[in-house]
Picture 1: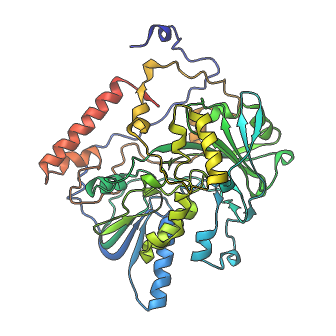
Picture 2: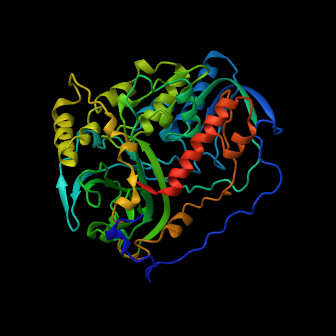
Picture 3: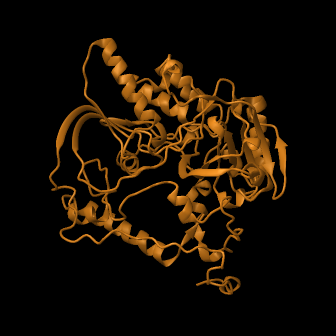
Length: 476
């Protein structure tokens, strides 16, 4: 039930709101999908890499390099849900090439590589509703010998479902996105988070624009704090000028951000939006990295969480963990040093001083202390993402400004630019472990009956989850 002050809010759509209708897939008739008894093609491989991201591809390349050096021949397979490797990538990341230099020393001589735009000047600013005030930026965001990714790829998705192959493997390496379904199962099954701090997460909405030449400054990198986020919410926005007149921008409250005078000017004139995407990232830093190995495999890349929150970068660490998974030597790498230096910067924003306390401590730590402190801030229970979730009826809805195409558009127009295409009732595409029902789709839970206790527990958990979400929408 709405609070009294919210009950008066009109429920009719404003005149400027464009109504779009969505078509759902046809209802499937016949027997329920049975992931256990369905007929599948089978194969045996030595190494199975789940996910064709930077970490997964680095593993595969390094394994083949080692095979060539040692005269061995192992079978390696990469499982990627996109139509092709890279089809789930939207450009606009600042890349440190350290891991790429180790993996492919001559990468600059490879034709048509995407790192064609060196990163140039780097600035940080604090946004108010009308102004952009300059701030000193931490040394970790310096752009010496860094590049801005310049490959514009849109998510192509999967147009139809077909039963996947069953692989019998000796080693499984999971590069399955942030908090992916397989990673959650493995982390829970082997208690990989038993001795570490809880992970925290952020979400970023990103757009790539081809801007007017008067606003284009190739190599420019800007980061912003403040508006439209409140002072007690950790987050920020970015602006990366890539090659070919392209600019990547993004934030969580994206549509409000683009109405700021700074971004209105950037996207004015002869500018065109090319793509739209959203991505979840890990923010827990070093103290939230779980145990990486388990019986028969390991976590790599975003599945484990190696984002350097001060640099706002994780590709270089993801690639390096891929190399190390192939070489089994994580403890001797520079990934630990990269994350250890900034381990206290993200937790510093969890104090009662919120944004201002985090900025003060992070400035001192990054400029002077360099992370060489005898203490490590802990992510206490109250800082868990779930502890900040409350019923939507307790809060005043956000008053978003009217859409002003092409500067800001409705959700369905933005989603159309992602070019995703899949059926809404498509069964789960990946499963692992002895109890195949846990973490699988609802139909799989009903049909997998080898472990009745586990199935009943999973069905109850799902039922409770649905009841909560149907009864009361949640906001963060």
